Structures are given as structure tokens and as C-alpha cells.
Image (cartoon, rainbow, N blue to C red; front, side):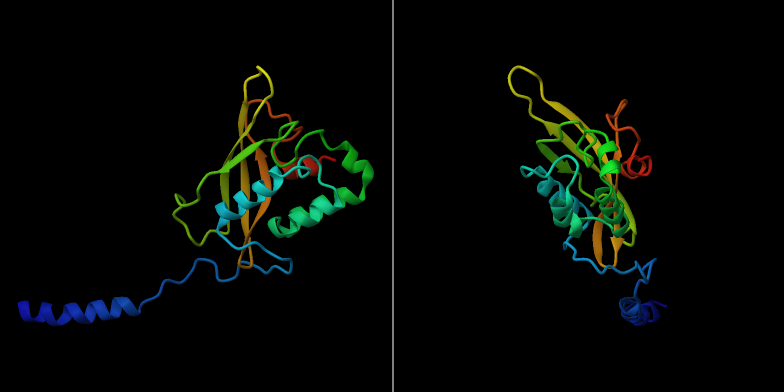
Length: 183
């Protein structure tokens, strides 16, 4: 019996090394737009780092939207581009930073790691983003969170929506997509 186990053990190890794990999703769609390399948390952090640069907060104009294109899903980009083409719709958007849900926008944004998410075959991953704004003078700093929905388009991770968190978000709806639909 002991000899049989010793013979079978190498055979079992060899067979287990030959097996492969098939991903849950073979096709995650395609993407014809440029994309940013990295995992969902890395791409989200790069997007918010770009947003923190001067002149990138608030309602995006056409030039700013073009800089955001590699970070945005096709659906969200087209929705924002449609808003940009219609000056009336854009004017009706709330006076706020639409990617943070705050009227003035953040001065810092820290995307939480997605390494705690066990499913590596996921097609979408919601990530928390801790934001804060440094106030001038004696006023205390302001801190809040949003949840950014990252989806896979082809091999790229892109921002598809932003959920405004908190008891009373300054946005008129709970998410960026809902805010755009209401206009």
C-alpha cells in the first residue's frame, strides 16, 4: 500500500500541474479607445490624480473630456460628450465636481486597494475613494467618500460610474449616471 502511494503521488502532482483554470468570463468585450494599463485600483488612482491637477475639476469641457477618455468607459464617455454638445443640459448639471460629488472638489483622493477582492475574473469592481479638501484659514478640513465603479472593457479597467456616499450628498442623484440621466 505504501509503495502504491509513493508511485501515485508524483503522478497526481504531474496531473495537477497540467490542469488550468478557465476564467469565468471568456469575453469581456472590446475597446477601441486608448486605455491606461493597470488594475482597477491603479487606474482609478491615476484618474483621480489627473483630476486633482489644476483646471481639471468641475464640469469637464471638451478638451478636459478628451484627456479623461482613456480612463472612462465608452458608455460614460458618450453620456458626458452628449452633455457637452448640449449647452442647455450641461448648464443644468449641478454646480459641483461631478466625479467627487462635492461643490468645490477634493485636494486629495486616495483609492482603496482592490487586492482584498477575491474574484480576479470580475467584470466590475466598486472601489471606495477617500477624498478630502484642505480649507484655508481656521476652517476644518472636509473629508468624504465616493464609490467608483470600475469595469473591464477588453483588457482595460475604466471608470463607469461614481456613487456619491454620505447622508446628504450635494448631488441631486445618488450616482453620476443618474445625475446625467435626470438632465
